[in-house]
Image (cartoon, rainbow, N blue to C red; front, side, top):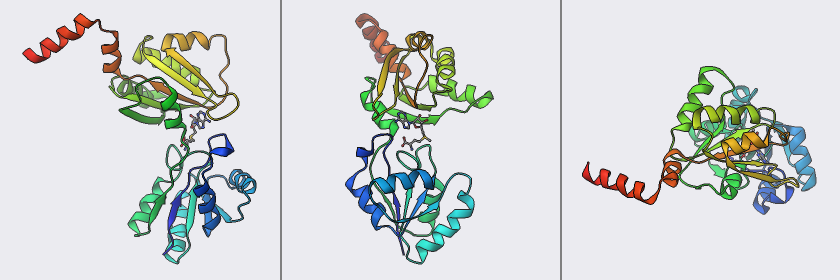
Length: 246
Ligand code: SAM
C-alpha cells in the first residue's frame, strides 16, 4: 500500500519549507493540492516535478474514494493545502479519516501553521490554548461561538480575513469586554509582519485610523487568567482563603 503524507507548506516565507517537506513532495507519486496552480508555483520554486491532482472542499466527497483506491494500489500521496498545515482550517481531515479506516499509513510532517506562529509571539499565556479557527460569519452560531469563547479560561486562537477583522474585534468587545488582552498578528513570516498587542479597546481605537492589511490571527487571553492578573495581592489571598474554607 502507498502512504498518505500530510505536508505543511509556508504561510508566506518560502524559506519556511522544510528539507523533509521538499523531499517528501519530490518522492511522492502524486500531490493532492487544494489549488493546483498555487502549489505549482511552490513546486517550481523547489524544482519538484511530481504530478498534481486537485483536492479541495468542493470535490472532497468525489476525490476521497479515488485517492484511497490509488493508495491501496501502492501509490503514495502527499496532501498539501494552499498555506500552512493541512486540516488546520483547511482541507484534509476527511481524507485522513478515510485513510485510517482503509488501514493506510498516515505520515504527518511538522511545519508552518499561522496558529502557533502567532501564539508564541503574542505575549499572552501560550498554554493551555484553544484553537478555534474561523468564527461563524453570522447569526446564532456566531453569537454562541463568541459567548462560549469569552468564558473559556484558555488562551483562544481565531483566524480572520482583513475584510472582517474590524467587525470581529468589535463583536469581541461585546462578549469579552474592552479590557480583555488581545494580540493581532498579521502577515506572519512576510515582509510586513506586524503584531498589535494590547486590549480589545486599544485594538478598536487603532483600527479607527488604520486599514487592516493581510491575513490575521487573533490571540485572546483566557478569562480566569485575566481576572487573576487584574486582582490585587490581598484579593488573591482572600479568594484562596475562601477556597480553602469551602
Ligand atoms: N492551514 C493554515 C495554517 O496551518 O495556519 C490555515 C489556513 S486558513 C484557510 C487561512 C487563515 O490562516 C487566514 O485567514 C489567517 O487567519 C491565517 N493565516 C494564514 N497565513 C497567515 C499569515 N501569514 N499571517 C497571519 N495569518 C495567517
